[in-house]
Length: 52
Image (cartoon, rainbow, N blue to C red; front, side):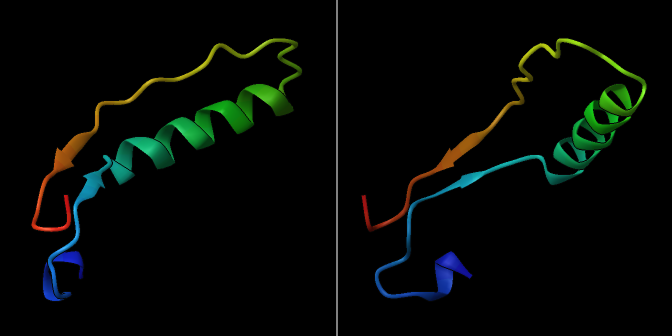
């Protein structure tokens, strides 16, 4: 949708499937009693369009 605006918006592409998988993994770890969860870093991509 960002490309359909005027001017086309700069956005950040995120791996939504990976985000969902990590979310479920972390929730299951919490349910199992994990006391500490490490931060998760996933790759992103900056899509530069005319708004930047």
